Image 1 (cartoon, rainbow, N blue to C red):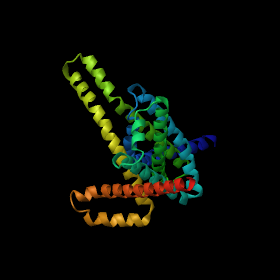
Image 2 (image 1 turned 180 degrees about the horizontal axis):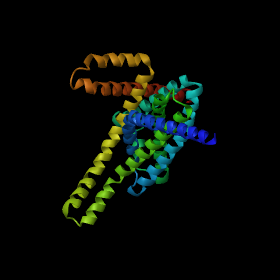
Image 3 (image 1 turned 30 degrees about the vertical axis):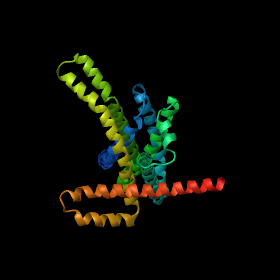
Image 4 (image 1 turned 135 degrees about the vertical axis):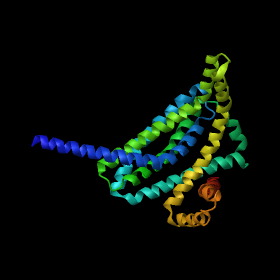
Length: 302
């Protein structure tokens, strides 16, 4: 009898592990798109940090990301079980925040405003420790929104499966994505160091030296590209969240895309353009609203 019970338990465990493996594979595919955006957004966060402090900053953000997951995974599972209707509004707020943050970056860079001189003076940090802390804090805040999106996507895939399977799959995806993103970010920011190492090792000759020269020359340009891509990703992720959480917007954009879906190039590009414009527009509105509220507050207090 005891042997039969043990065999039944082992069979149940094997069944759960099989479900976990299948669901984890599906969830990983679904969240891979967010991984690219997360990578671009976080790689840009180390821009302006001293070379010897890049890895400590990435590690600081990674630790914050793990803390985000420790908060978000159990919270999302509890909300999903007790009040699943609450997940979409929270995700929408996160998407709007990303749009706002992206629009603020664009407006501060390309539109003149009365804080320009002060901000330019502050571009060279006087307190490097405080500057790093500010960078890490901002990156962790952005990571929170992207982590929420990853967890919600994973939750959507495992809905209807046993509670244990949901817990294991969502936790596994959260852990793997965090390790993947910050491992790649660490690799990207140290490409130039790898190039210098290859140059020294090859003593200025051969294939290794050529690869080292390429890495040294392209690493700074790659970081600049990632800065732009990271800002664009804010609009794409934020706009995508808005599109998929507001049915009317989703219906409108869906009709636009459907009308040109058969066109070779436009049909492939339009979904991204539409989502990006939606994110930029939402961010611009939010920046305008908060700027107006700030002026009203100033006039009241003055």
